[in-house]
Image (tube, rainbow, N blue to C red; front, top):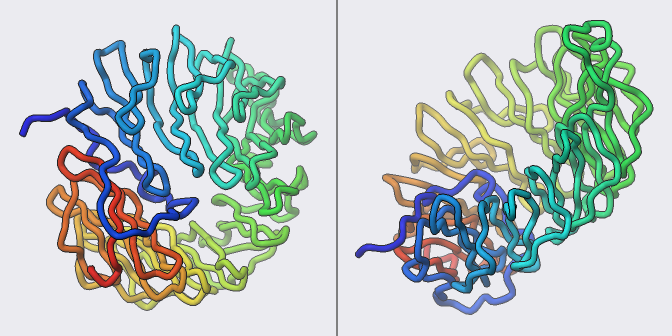
Length: 433
């Protein structure tokens, strides 16, 4: 059967690693077609499905200079010059980065923001997935816009930004002073800082990376470089007294405590509030995460060169993996830890250090049921994608699948995928797998 070219059948890591923010309300068993790809006249460049599986959208390339966005097979008007980063907010609104009359903006449910930019990129969601932020560039100046409102403040460069959990605040890593070519002394003085709600921190740094908000939105932490070989975390413009030869992204716990993977004495450790929390020395340590109860900590570690695993509260799993371990995930009750692992070129899921026996060409982030008794993920094998639950592979395969979602009871699973020429939502019993 001939149909439209759905060239992006393989899912992006962004689509697959993000679990649905707002769970579906409709748990009636059965299949529903959301989008008929045969009705889309052109090359399907991108696909997106809402978290609840109620809506599907596509970016369709009609010609090299013309694209349309169709939601539930209804095209938005007018046609667009460019469109990408198609997604849904948690309340079911489709949005994308679009170019209109050589200017970029965000279009939400067919309506573009009034603000236009020379370029815009890196859209992020906050406020329970309802607030949209984006980085912008106009007249060689950089800024941030949130829900269509552009900051008045402009900067020489903007490396990254963060939205507070409720979406009401914004922090960004920005360059606030010019750095003349080959001016080493100016470089060592620092030209970068963090700006919070358009107010720059007074102190300047050689480099600033990955600003993040505390869970209550009251504090901001970031990686900072204070000297040519010194790195540390700065909290609300106050750098830790302790410096390290290298660091990774900070992570807030429930209160104001900050976790930071740090390198010193030729190895990696986990620090909290400037002091070493995990005394064990690792060849590598990153992707620290905290259990929902804020009682346990897990991180990806290398216990020897090329031997990857997960450490929980500074105790590594006994099983190690040769290729890589992805970011760990806690169960809702904090009792279990799961992670995608790759060993000898094959992927699987490991739970509390025990890998599932089936291996695959690719796997995505594990998703726990509300009670923690089941784990689901999407896998790829021989070009097709399937649902796997607790190591059991579902009998059906799809051209593409998005992250699965469990019902509140854990007895049903929502699938969102591409089945031939249809984008579908399907609710199945967990016991079917």
